[in-house]
Length: 213
Image 1 (cartoon, rainbow, N blue to C red):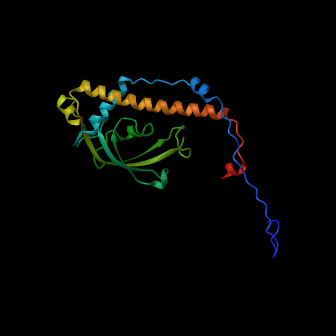
Image 2 (cartoon, one colour):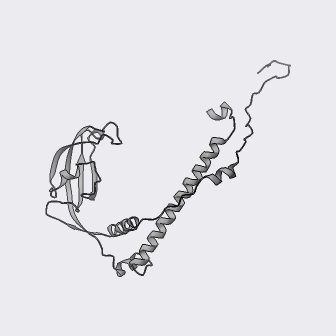
Image 3 (cartoon, rainbow, N blue to C red):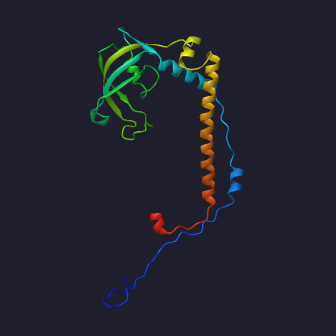
């Protein structure tokens, strides 16, 4: 405000930031230089999906023997060094390496309702820096030991999960679905690469007010 007085004109000054002219580089030329990658579907990816389908429809039977690799284990566990001794619940297939190295080995041979205390050292490269390379005490309580019975991939089973005639048709459908997902991911990656290259050659000076906002 420059002047604000009775019976006088109101005088003021305004400062504004205007958007500058954006000079785009030759984006068509840039697009032509960015290669579109083509991903292939491995047979192992198809088999992994088939395994997931089987597990999603598996039946479980209670086991009274000590647990071993391949058994379905349900447990509670806690550690004074992890989230203030918070109690966790988990269910998993024993031996698949879901936990930190050595943890599942300590569970082998345990039975239903059995408890065990042991110490494990977290890997040096563990994502939680506070736990990386540190030793922690764990207390485990086994709630259930079960046998996972996977259904056989018979034509009858396959026809129940979808409009598929047999295993050959199901595999082809799975492969096509995975390929579509990979293609979409590659297209998105390609777009990101193109935008990144365009931004590197883009010439524009933005006002501070726009940057800070």
